[in-house]
Image 1 (cartoon, one colour):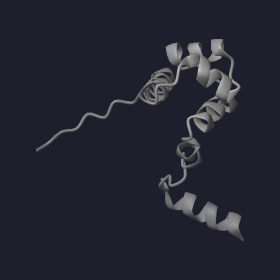
Image 2: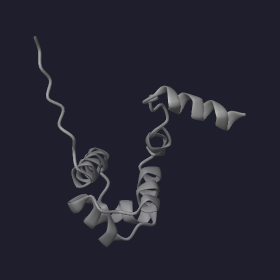
Image 3: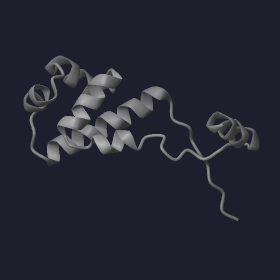
Length: 97
């Protein structure tokens, strides 16, 4: 029998993972931090901090994604979250009414 161990990531780990993904996209497109800062309107210091630590405001992350032309990824975030219970289904149906 296969046993899978699911490890939950901390919020800090998730933030750093997102920052690493953004950094890889920036680098593969050969965009400097300076150029991305200018293109996105996010300060160079904020961009550097984000790539180093994962810390950034949501609006700045959205600006960076738009500058990299990947804002659709953010738009799809939480788009199809499965229901956890029958109660959630009922609650959603009640909101529609």
